[in-house]
Amino acid sequence: MANATKTQLQELYLAYFGRPGDPMGLDYWVGVGITQRNFACGIYEQYEYQYIFENKSIAEQVNHLYKNLFCRDADIQGLLYWTNKVYLGELLLCNIAIDLVWAARNNIGSENDKKTLQERVDWCNEYTNTVNMSTTSIASYQPISTDPWVDSDLFIEVKEFLANCDLSADPPPPLRRDCIYWPCPSEDPYVQQIAIYSEEESLMKKAVNDYLITETDDIELESNDSICGCQLNMTVGEMDVLTGIKDYDGNLHGFLGEAPSIVKSSYKYQGKLDVNNDGITEAIYTNKESGRWVTASIDAITGGFHYGKHGQGGTTRIVGIYEDPLVAAGLVEKNSDLDSSHTFINDLKLDNLILKTVGDYDGDNFQEVYWSKVDNTAYLRAVMHSDGNIQYANYQNLDQMTDYLTSNGFADTVALIC
Ligand SMILES: [Ca+2]
Ligand SMILES: [Ca+2]
Image (cartoon, rainbow, N blue to C red):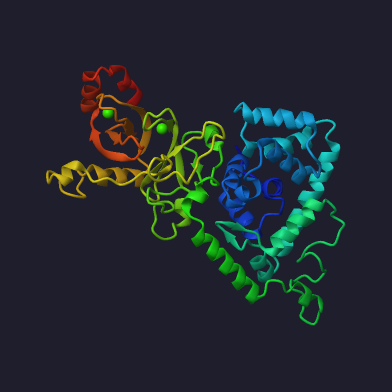
């Protein structure tokens, strides 16, 4: 699928967030190149999305898209159609905006929607471009905080303006005045009026935000961090951005500090299987930048992930790093080629593993996830805990893998792995 244009990305910002994209974000995504659907998935994973959509039913969410895009409520027929598609699992919410836009642009009888949409997207483009003209406006057109999401005053103003659906009304800054740079020159009394982003106010908001972060414990957050279900539609090998994925201990992306951006956007979808045989399927990702891998349980209803379920009893996490039992027993030197933990991480960093299948081949009630090296020179058997984390793993060559599976009565599985 072709990469999305700036306007297509702008449409998605409008649909989901009811505001124009910020210039840096738009430029970034156009620069790196991303398809509309992947971008929609990404938007869907944003804290801003949850801030706007949490506690809304599917029908309300669908209607919200209509309002943002076309300034009208969904007609009953449309609402039923899209809502049912989501209920039946034929479509995911994050794909609907793209379909709505396509329908408005192409279907006969959609002329009003098409016109409204075009005017709004044009306005958004103009707004983003104007914001981009000064560092002050770029700095103001940002949220106070992303986790939890706190809108800035300017975000609130812009969202209200677009929600009012009157593009001829007095626009929010920096469009409000015809000075090119915003704030306008200081002799203009208007500056006083828009000096709403004072240091004092920013500090106060930061204090409130810090309070929210420290006082909101994980359990409270967990119910609110259900994530995009687009993974069900992903193709093996596609890259994804897993915004909130954490390790067992709750470290985002498995990093103690801030993870590098490249790590955040380098989750390669490997397929889905049930790593712990509890009837809930996990999507599996590898990350060559961090050398880690991910199991993410797919919610049967929403098709999404719950990033909060990373700890005990959860199966949505960066999989832990184990110590090779042979190293622990003193039989193999740590970090040598024979240390499977070391070699596993190395293979992840080389993007050298392909997910194959899963089963309990030796009948001990623990699932074994099989991977193959890209060149088929070795196979990795990862033995999982019942909570989905890894116990240990061992590499096998073709003969060893064949013998192991055949002797346990799984001769047919050999062909699935090599
Ligand atoms: Ca499972
Ligand atoms: Ca087993």
